[in-house]
Image (cartoon, rainbow, N blue to C red; front, side, top):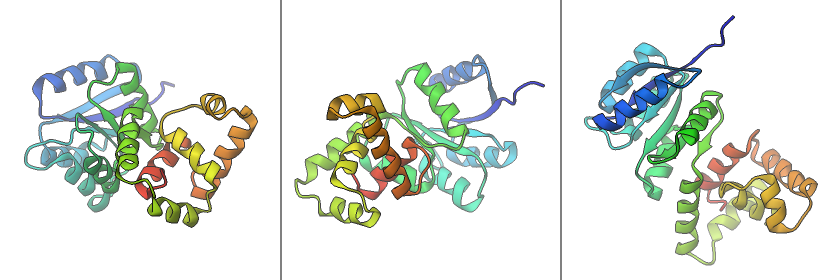
Length: 221
């Protein structure tokens, strides 16, 4: 019995980018290109018609932008598909708006093909994905805005996170592995794993990527 392929809907108005992505999807084992849309409104219509596993969605689209289209797909139509934002926009407003609208992942145009494939596979499995480049942009923005972060303290208190757990969570958001976190904090790998386990339990989550998304949305880092 053949493994089921990941059905992908591509929503991108830039012809050159769309054709390149379509070729990449069609040539990737385990992927199947179901359709292509040139604007957000058409993307919503095709999503309802084709029922894809993953929608690769640009933000700057005509007629209906990618964030509005994502919100309609997730909140109004309640389609059981994952939306991966694929965009050149790296500002905080768009990043937070995308996740608030229901996006499952956010990846920058210009990312490597391997990174894009990993992102599509991750969101197709119902896990969240956030580009480490985006995490760094948001962290830098937040850290540059204030030295005394009362919001972070309130959020940490809400979830019962310790100062050390917040530090580990910040490194998770920045894309570090358990081994890299252990080396940076000069602690054993078992200690790092224990911190990560506690963080996930307190946030009621099952994987690190979702923890990174929640951390950014809740102001925990």
